[in-house]
Length: 390
Length: 224
Picture 1 (cartoon, chains in turn brown, yellow):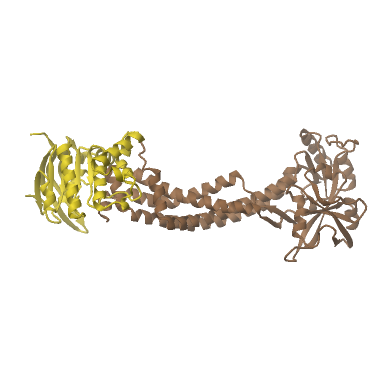
Picture 2 (cartoon, chains in turn red, cyan):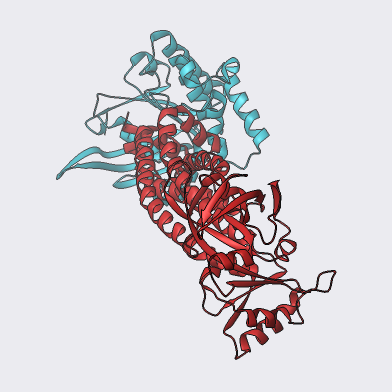
């Protein structure tokens, strides 16, 4: 039978030495703040890019291209792709397939004035219907054949001089911003969109970058992939749109995670040593108490457990505080250069239940490791010597 | 003549300090009857607290046997000995040794956590014990909110709450003023007379010893 010293004993001891408790928990809170912030950053990036893709869409690119920007699809290939039977048709009977062209242009960032890349997407008339998450926030859509563009809300916020009604210059032409669009926080919001024919002409490019197609049913994906990838005339690769964007986030999110976790693990050593010092001091201050409990008949494991619980509560307190602080970051938008596309991508810190649980578990691990040795010392004390230590 | 509760037979105990072996108790033999109130007196270093610790099962003799209620406690393993203490021994300490973060009633309840009693039963027993020591009105007080005499009475309530076979008291009045000391001794005396509690007490204080039925003196590790 496990004889437990009441949990209130551990809790009240934490309360009795409030200042030490707050300082030690503060150290743990900082580590958990950084830990969860890193995970939230990586998750936010993934969420943004994965949301960019849709389950019903497939994307066709040149084999081996990491991103649309590196891909080339010529007009012959585009026509072949358009004629595939798995592709859904619009009410007019036209296939729902959009050949798009991607180029990067340089723009000054708001605030710093530093130049950064903006992904500029030449879209087809079908593009909008295939991306229902895209909605105009202000202004109107560009008109085909004119030098007009619409800008994503995140791009508009982060770059200088691309607001509604402004004129931007690239490819030796002036373009008027006629609309601002949102796309449910996805990667499209960091882009500039215009008519693909205009884009190809302005940049004197003969080929598209990618082709996005809507499938009549998700089960049409495997045969479509098999046929197009097996076509010896072209060198194509077919991916589900969601998987394509998830792949794009994998490298960046992975990098953030590895670097961030490495740093937090180092930090956590400090916090753990802090918890250990606090718990050793607590054991030393309560030597007589420990002797008394043992004399009364409490076994060693009860003492071990009482001190371990105290340390776990201490770490949970710090972990909770760190997590609350980190959750405030959710209102913050950050931007970075996406490694896969070399263009600016805006995204938010995103908290998930899994991240919350992982953070609290990490805090408990710190509490356990920091509190274990002091608890062992408490449990191993000799009764007589403890009782004499007044 | 009641049967002896405590039978100590030729017990030796010494401590090592660095390389020196210091004998503390030499060839102690003693019997204590059930219902006895024994005071152990003697100068500092005479070994009286060591003898008390051996009787209470928080220390072990080097040689000799100690039987309490027919059980040879030297033969018990560590966890059996801890269980035995929780059932048979009530401790009263000189400095009360209350847990500062627990209230009076929670302190008294503490030894009952080692029994199969329910939470409600534990609380009832603890309240009863505090009632016996006259502190029903101080149950929710923390030790720091009590006087020394009151703290020691809480200590006594904690010692009697499990209805142990034997009460061991180490200088129970050693840290108290005259009036509080008298109250505490009256209480111990009443526990012995009215509740037939067997008590072994170590004391320096002749006035405290007066309350005991038997007084034994120790000097340089031997009973005289």
